[in-house]
Length: 120
Length: 112
Image (cartoon, rainbow over all chains, first blue to last red):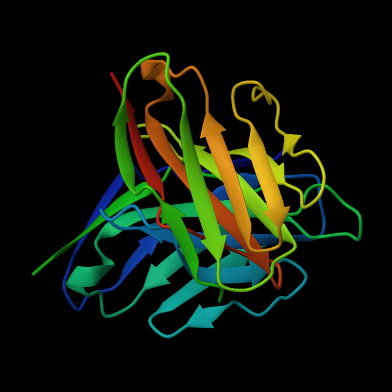
Protein backbone atom coordinates (compact mmCIF):
# COMPACT_ATOMS: atom_id res chain seq x y z
CA UNK A 1 0.00 0.00 0.00
CA UNK A 2 1.05 3.52 -0.68
CA UNK A 3 1.20 6.37 1.82
CA UNK A 4 1.51 10.08 1.17
CA UNK A 5 2.58 12.52 3.85
CA UNK A 6 2.32 16.29 3.88
CA UNK A 7 4.01 17.51 7.01
CA UNK A 8 2.97 21.17 6.74
CA UNK A 9 -0.65 21.63 7.84
CA UNK A 10 -0.53 25.34 7.05
CA UNK A 11 1.71 27.71 5.13
CA UNK A 12 1.53 31.39 4.38
CA UNK A 13 3.30 33.62 1.88
CA UNK A 14 3.25 37.21 0.78
CA UNK A 15 1.89 38.04 -2.62
CA UNK A 16 4.57 37.86 -5.36
CA UNK A 17 6.88 35.72 -3.25
CA UNK A 18 7.79 32.07 -3.68
CA UNK A 19 6.62 29.22 -1.48
CA UNK A 20 7.42 25.51 -1.43
CA UNK A 21 5.02 22.84 -0.21
CA UNK A 22 6.48 19.51 0.87
CA UNK A 23 5.32 15.99 0.19
CA UNK A 24 6.86 12.60 0.82
CA UNK A 25 5.50 9.22 -0.15
CA UNK A 26 6.19 5.58 0.35
CA UNK A 27 5.70 2.89 -2.25
CA UNK A 28 7.24 -0.28 -3.58
CA UNK A 29 6.03 0.54 -7.08
CA UNK A 30 8.41 1.69 -9.78
CA UNK A 31 5.93 3.11 -12.27
CA UNK A 32 3.59 5.73 -10.95
CA UNK A 33 2.40 9.30 -11.16
CA UNK A 34 2.48 12.05 -8.61
CA UNK A 35 0.07 14.95 -8.61
CA UNK A 36 -0.60 18.21 -6.90
CA UNK A 37 -4.22 19.29 -6.64
CA UNK A 38 -5.58 22.60 -5.43
CA UNK A 39 -8.89 22.88 -3.60
CA UNK A 40 -10.10 26.44 -3.07
CA UNK A 41 -13.09 27.21 -0.81
CA UNK A 42 -15.37 26.41 -3.75
CA UNK A 43 -14.26 22.76 -3.05
CA UNK A 44 -13.48 22.12 -6.71
CA UNK A 45 -10.44 19.86 -7.01
CA UNK A 46 -8.17 21.41 -9.62
CA UNK A 47 -5.23 19.54 -11.10
CA UNK A 48 -2.14 21.73 -10.76
CA UNK A 49 0.64 19.51 -12.04
CA UNK A 50 1.57 15.90 -12.75
CA UNK A 51 4.94 14.17 -12.58
CA UNK A 52 5.65 10.85 -14.24
CA UNK A 53 8.01 8.80 -12.10
CA UNK A 54 9.96 7.46 -15.07
CA UNK A 55 10.88 10.99 -16.14
CA UNK A 56 13.83 12.58 -14.45
CA UNK A 57 12.94 16.06 -15.62
CA UNK A 58 10.84 18.00 -13.14
CA UNK A 59 7.41 19.02 -14.39
CA UNK A 60 6.59 22.71 -14.81
CA UNK A 61 3.28 24.47 -15.43
CA UNK A 62 3.67 28.24 -15.64
CA UNK A 63 4.29 29.45 -12.06
CA UNK A 64 4.13 25.94 -10.65
CA UNK A 65 7.05 23.54 -10.64
CA UNK A 66 8.01 20.44 -8.75
CA UNK A 67 11.19 19.05 -7.26
CA UNK A 68 10.90 15.30 -7.74
CA UNK A 69 13.48 13.22 -5.90
CA UNK A 70 12.61 9.60 -6.68
CA UNK A 71 15.25 7.98 -4.50
CA UNK A 72 14.25 10.12 -1.55
CA UNK A 73 10.53 9.69 -2.39
CA UNK A 74 10.05 13.41 -2.17
CA UNK A 75 7.80 15.56 -4.32
CA UNK A 76 7.62 19.25 -3.43
CA UNK A 77 5.63 21.97 -5.17
CA UNK A 78 7.09 25.40 -5.75
CA UNK A 79 4.77 28.30 -6.45
CA UNK A 80 6.50 31.35 -7.86
CA UNK A 81 5.11 34.87 -7.90
CA UNK A 82 2.30 33.86 -5.54
CA UNK A 83 -1.11 35.37 -6.22
CA UNK A 84 -4.11 35.87 -3.98
CA UNK A 85 -5.97 33.31 -6.08
CA UNK A 86 -3.45 30.67 -5.05
CA UNK A 87 -5.01 30.62 -1.57
CA UNK A 88 -6.36 27.09 -1.20
CA UNK A 89 -5.81 23.65 0.27
CA UNK A 90 -3.13 21.78 -1.68
CA UNK A 91 -3.09 17.99 -1.85
CA UNK A 92 -0.26 15.79 -2.97
CA UNK A 93 -1.43 12.49 -4.49
CA UNK A 94 0.01 9.21 -5.78
CA UNK A 95 -1.33 6.91 -8.48
CA UNK A 96 0.05 3.68 -9.83
CA UNK A 97 0.64 3.80 -13.56
CA UNK A 98 -2.13 2.23 -15.56
CA UNK A 99 -1.64 -1.27 -16.86
CA UNK A 100 -4.02 -2.75 -19.39
CA UNK A 101 -6.75 -4.50 -17.45
CA UNK A 102 -5.37 -3.24 -14.16
CA UNK A 103 -7.62 -2.12 -11.36
CA UNK A 104 -5.37 0.49 -9.83
CA UNK A 105 -6.00 3.20 -12.37
CA UNK A 106 -7.89 6.04 -10.84
CA UNK A 107 -7.05 5.18 -7.29
CA UNK A 108 -5.40 8.28 -5.97
CA UNK A 109 -3.82 8.14 -2.55
CA UNK A 110 -3.90 11.62 -1.07
CA UNK A 111 -1.85 13.35 1.57
CA UNK A 112 -3.51 15.21 4.41
CA UNK A 113 -3.30 18.55 2.64
CA UNK A 114 -1.59 21.88 3.26
CA UNK A 115 -3.60 25.06 3.67
CA UNK A 116 -1.82 27.85 1.80
CA UNK A 117 -2.73 31.46 2.47
CA UNK A 118 -1.39 34.21 0.25
CA UNK A 119 -1.35 37.60 1.96
CA UNK A 120 -1.55 40.89 0.09
CA UNK B 1 -9.85 18.19 -20.13
CA UNK B 2 -13.40 16.89 -19.79
CA UNK B 3 -16.08 19.15 -18.38
CA UNK B 4 -17.70 17.40 -15.43
CA UNK B 5 -21.08 18.54 -14.11
CA UNK B 6 -22.19 17.26 -10.76
CA UNK B 7 -25.48 17.83 -9.04
CA UNK B 8 -26.83 18.67 -6.61
CA UNK B 9 -24.05 20.97 -5.46
CA UNK B 10 -25.26 20.70 -1.89
CA UNK B 11 -28.10 19.22 0.07
CA UNK B 12 -29.31 18.88 3.62
CA UNK B 13 -31.00 15.56 4.32
CA UNK B 14 -32.74 13.83 7.16
CA UNK B 15 -31.38 10.75 8.85
CA UNK B 16 -32.60 7.52 7.26
CA UNK B 17 -33.26 8.97 3.82
CA UNK B 18 -31.27 8.49 0.60
CA UNK B 19 -29.72 10.95 -1.83
CA UNK B 20 -28.69 10.33 -5.43
CA UNK B 21 -25.85 12.37 -6.85
CA UNK B 22 -25.47 12.73 -10.60
CA UNK B 23 -22.29 13.14 -12.62
CA UNK B 24 -22.40 14.11 -16.29
CA UNK B 25 -19.32 14.37 -18.52
CA UNK B 26 -19.23 16.23 -21.81
CA UNK B 27 -17.31 13.46 -23.57
CA UNK B 28 -17.15 9.69 -23.42
CA UNK B 29 -14.77 8.44 -20.79
CA UNK B 30 -13.85 4.90 -19.88
CA UNK B 31 -12.99 5.50 -16.27
CA UNK B 32 -15.28 7.19 -13.75
CA UNK B 33 -14.78 7.22 -10.01
CA UNK B 34 -16.49 8.39 -6.86
CA UNK B 35 -14.55 9.88 -3.96
CA UNK B 36 -15.57 11.02 -0.49
CA UNK B 37 -14.04 13.85 1.47
CA UNK B 38 -15.02 13.86 5.12
CA UNK B 39 -14.86 17.17 7.02
CA UNK B 40 -11.28 18.36 7.34
CA UNK B 41 -9.93 15.25 5.64
CA UNK B 42 -8.45 14.37 2.29
CA UNK B 43 -10.19 12.31 -0.36
CA UNK B 44 -10.86 8.58 -0.25
CA UNK B 45 -11.92 6.48 -3.23
CA UNK B 46 -15.33 4.90 -2.76
CA UNK B 47 -15.60 2.94 -5.99
CA UNK B 48 -14.90 2.72 -9.69
CA UNK B 49 -18.04 3.06 -11.79
CA UNK B 50 -17.85 0.49 -14.56
CA UNK B 51 -19.98 0.89 -17.65
CA UNK B 52 -22.25 -2.08 -18.15
CA UNK B 53 -21.24 -3.92 -15.00
CA UNK B 54 -21.25 -3.58 -11.25
CA UNK B 55 -19.07 -0.97 -9.64
CA UNK B 56 -15.83 -2.01 -7.99
CA UNK B 57 -15.81 -0.94 -4.34
CA UNK B 58 -12.85 -0.13 -2.15
CA UNK B 59 -12.36 -1.67 1.22
CA UNK B 60 -14.81 -0.23 3.72
CA UNK B 61 -17.47 0.68 1.16
CA UNK B 62 -20.36 -1.58 0.20
CA UNK B 63 -22.91 -1.61 -2.56
CA UNK B 64 -25.91 -1.59 -0.23
CA UNK B 65 -24.78 1.70 1.26
CA UNK B 66 -23.40 3.33 -1.89
CA UNK B 67 -25.13 1.90 -4.96
CA UNK B 68 -23.66 3.22 -8.20
CA UNK B 69 -25.04 3.24 -11.70
CA UNK B 70 -23.12 3.76 -14.94
CA UNK B 71 -25.60 3.41 -17.81
CA UNK B 72 -23.27 4.88 -20.45
CA UNK B 73 -19.85 6.41 -20.99
CA UNK B 74 -20.89 9.95 -20.03
CA UNK B 75 -23.05 9.52 -16.94
CA UNK B 76 -22.97 7.98 -13.48
CA UNK B 77 -24.90 8.24 -10.25
CA UNK B 78 -23.95 7.59 -6.64
CA UNK B 79 -26.64 7.01 -4.05
CA UNK B 80 -25.96 7.47 -0.37
CA UNK B 81 -28.51 5.20 1.33
CA UNK B 82 -30.05 5.22 4.78
CA UNK B 83 -28.03 8.25 5.71
CA UNK B 84 -26.66 9.06 9.13
CA UNK B 85 -24.80 12.17 10.32
CA UNK B 86 -21.54 10.29 9.72
CA UNK B 87 -22.28 10.45 5.99
CA UNK B 88 -21.95 14.22 6.04
CA UNK B 89 -19.15 14.79 3.53
CA UNK B 90 -18.27 16.14 0.14
CA UNK B 91 -18.79 13.57 -2.59
CA UNK B 92 -16.81 14.04 -5.78
CA UNK B 93 -17.08 12.45 -9.18
CA UNK B 94 -13.83 11.96 -11.07
CA UNK B 95 -12.92 10.92 -14.60
CA UNK B 96 -9.68 9.66 -16.03
CA UNK B 97 -8.22 11.00 -19.25
CA UNK B 98 -4.68 10.40 -20.50
CA UNK B 99 -3.78 9.11 -17.04
CA UNK B 100 -4.80 12.26 -15.29
CA UNK B 101 -7.80 12.50 -13.02
CA UNK B 102 -10.20 15.41 -13.21
CA UNK B 103 -12.89 16.15 -10.67
CA UNK B 104 -16.38 17.54 -10.66
CA UNK B 105 -17.28 20.40 -8.35
CA UNK B 106 -18.51 18.08 -5.64
CA UNK B 107 -21.70 17.63 -3.64
CA UNK B 108 -21.72 18.97 -0.10
CA UNK B 109 -23.98 16.67 1.90
CA UNK B 110 -25.16 17.43 5.41
CA UNK B 111 -27.21 14.87 7.30
CA UNK B 112 -29.27 15.99 10.28
